[in-house]
Length: 90
Image 1 (cartoon, rainbow, N blue to C red):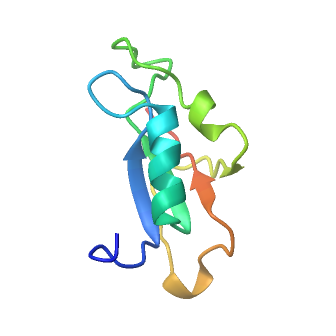
Image 2: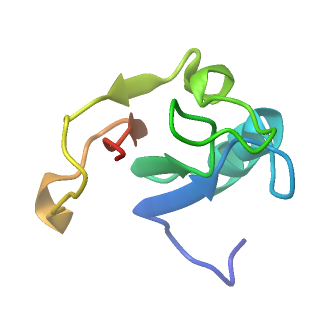
């Protein structure tokens, strides 16, 4: 992981199927220790494809739902603890 260096923002699949599942995604998050985690590739009301919801991944984590589809981050204002930001989908 030294080759990667510090990770501020991590977009990570969490739904399983053809990508990693919640358990493996949690392991990656623990390994990389990012400040912001944005889950992707998970089941929603509009997307099924035989994958899991984000709920198993979100369990036990600090989670924010900003009710927006996009996000602007500022390096000087990143959270002190790893925070999962769940963006709105459409």
